[in-house]
Image (cartoon, rainbow, N blue to C red; front, side, top):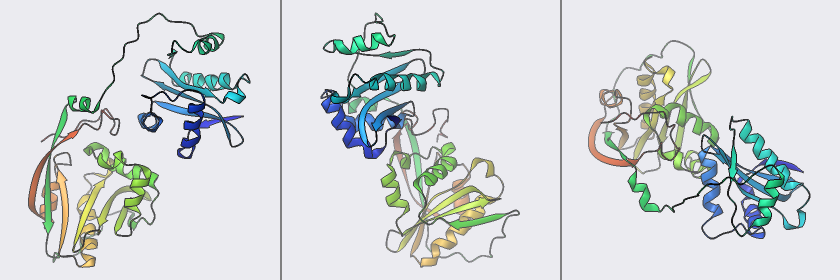
Length: 327
């Protein structure tokens, strides 16, 4: 037997296991529970296997003070072989290695055999009153929104100017062909964290792959001394126009003159397909120099809108210690 972390391809087998073990209670939808757990970064779903055969599962998570066990399940025809004990031990090790000192769980009154199992492992009844309330979509509206002012700019003529000199140092801009989603997420977070880039954090790996692997999307990575320092995305999906997306630098490279260099490269690249116009957006969450930089390069404002977005820190899609730059 071996224990490993859940993978996407395990979903069907896990749901079947939980159904066989009576863990398919109506309010607990695995299609929701598993993605929420994995996105939280505060928990794991561990699975026990014998070869390719799924034997059992356990969910473990923590709230910063204590760990919680959920969804312990063992195949009915493989019980009493210490599989459940091994899964609990694995979960306890996970919690202990994160510095947690207490682990808790809840047992339904209709499941007395499970209580006896945990008592044999050293767990004891802790007299507490458990209170609960189901949350609905309307509860999302209770959280404070972030106001964002978005400016849309366009360029309708290819700029006539002298080539911009290359900054000093070992610099290269390379197009990323078939970029791995993990590398894209690294760039998106590394460049976008200070500016609350959030939208693509909500997308699945498959959704991101569908965008960045589209032949009409070009991603160029700026390298300094062999290391990624920023990137820009050129979007040619709309007939007659090109959009420059996600232009930015890693924090340690801001203020070195690389922003204008990357922007000019993006503009020249965008015009290679002879569009009728090139578009770019910036918002009040972005670096304060972005808007004047774009205007200096030849873009002209053509529209402005105000949005009120959900705070991505609350959903865990942006690190909680970051603060947005407000209008």
